[in-house]
Amino acid sequence: MRERDDARRGDRAGGGAAGSAGGPAEGAAAQGGGGVREVKSAARTVELLEVLAARADRPARLQELAEGLGVPRSSMYALLQTLIQRGWVRTDVTGSLYGIGIHALLTGTGYLDSDPRVRAVRPFLDEASDAVGETIHLGRLDGMDVAYLATRESHEYLRTISRVGRRLPAHVGALGKALLAQRPDEELPPGPYERFTPNTLTDRVALAADLAEVRRRGYAVDREEGVAGIVGYGFALRYERPAVDAISCSVPVARVTASHEGRIVSVMRGIRERIESAVPDGGSRVQWR
Image (cartoon, rainbow, N blue to C red):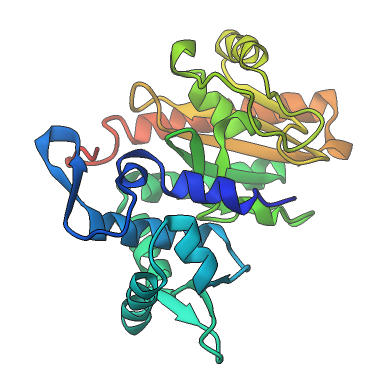
């Protein structure tokens, strides 16, 4: 599966209030939500970490980070050194290449361990995978992306694109389409959307029509739209409205038969109902935003 280009990654990492800050000056930035002014140095740090995380196994050089985030080389170098000392960024033996550090992993693990919904859903993923013999995912909507929170891999094949912590645009997969269908079409971006395979829905009208079918059917289907050779079935978890979490089943297209598809849908529907019963209030007394 191809990676999204660096420019798009930088745009996504710098989106929203953080992305609007810009410029090398330190101190308070533009007015944020709730009347609180954004701290530009904090926003810059988050932008840098998001860019490095999105690059995965492709480390970055000082110059491209400085140019990509619109920061002077000297300021970027100082920020990188600070984050290296604290374990959030790592560098190679030459000190010229930079990547995400181990503390990012520890923080991400802390997020998963502290989330009661993830803890509640995990056993059901095991059960679904055992029942259908396929790969099962739990994902959460984050803007117009879906972040993978848990995966139970089939023994028949591996999908490295769907490992925990990976993000994909919501329009390309069953998880994302199941969650988009929980929202009004007016919230869809105008498009065109990024193409991952020849089957990807890149047009807003086409995506809206597909989401209407998802609502009618009760679950989403991704027929090689995100990954060539893979069919997915996505089910929104409706313990919160609109749903932010969903589960899906991924199947190699060569194993998709009418009977196997029917069993997958039946099992996943049952699993969804049991999850929703087990997590009736969103799974926590704390209502996170």
